[in-house]
Length: 404
Ligand code: TRP
Ligand code: SF4
Image (cartoon, rainbow, N blue to C red; front, top):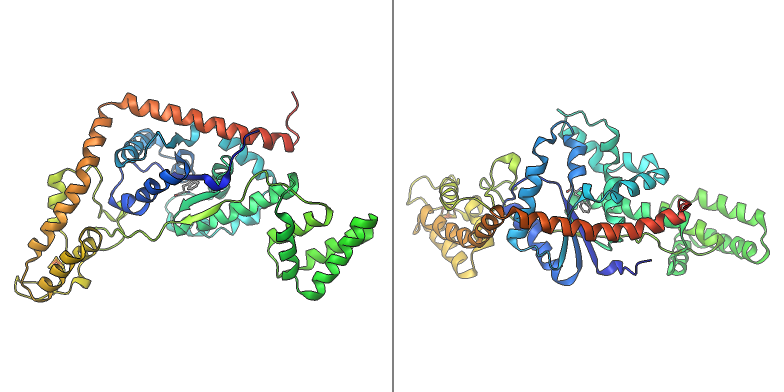
């Protein structure tokens, strides 16, 4: 059995969307880079997840996957300190997904907010599929297979991590014996209110001391009536009635990535679907042209019309790329019309070029040495698989699937 410290482990996945852009870099990847120094990180390409919504066009999947991994490596995700792998090459994710599906109430999946939202948003697709409904549970399996205590995700994915916690709790309740459980159970009892809590305690004591089945049944009925405690707490108290449990699958915490700071060229969120991106591998000429074409404060029609940076998407870029001194220069120059928009944009272009140059060079190097990329992925997949196999062995054991 492996001795994993869930607290020190980070896991996150990204759907293979192809070449990444500055939004990914400033929103997600820089966070990964910081985490890889402090944690035992697992980063994977969520190719099965991509199929849950794009099952009808798998043609670009491979290229997108390779392009994405090249960009991870080019920005500095370090295969020496992080494990980089592909979901579909670790079939344990699928096995755990299946096993968890046995004990996951359908209603937990139906009430995940992204389920209805995404169906609405992607209305042109038929997403009334089994795979799409189950996709948050596949995500739970991704996380739990590595017993990862920390999961960096955007706020939109928080509900998936929350559901993962419930799934883990239920699993442990059904199949495990949990330490640190006592205090939590005691806290849950307090939440029931004084009167109900005291009754629960009395029934539990009676049952534990005398084995009185009536007391047990009455206590269970009492718990079922509670609607001011969470389902998880309810399950704790069911377990607590009869004995304590161990954590087989630890409950992960979501590390919420702050709202992406990086706006797109038009001031909206940077996103491929808005066609307002600068790719990490964008050529210097294209970076130049894209910034030059960026809209500015519409009130600055002529060079000597004063402007307001707050109404200008270029200003957002300055908040990311310029120090205080330069920001003051923009503020003053813009509002007094002493600088032109092209002057103002020039410094942004320079900063982006400086940021992207080493990334572009590294990516080109990797494009020309795809064997290196392949072996990094293969090694990562092997390491990931070892970890997931340890977990699955334990899961199979407690679920009665260890006959040989
Ligand atoms: N569902 C995530 C997304 O669409 C990607 C993902 C899959 C993930 N499995 C994960 C993220 C596990 C964190 C942990 O962006
Ligand atoms: Fe925008 Fe800069 Fe032009 Fe002001 S000077 S409108 S901040 S580009």
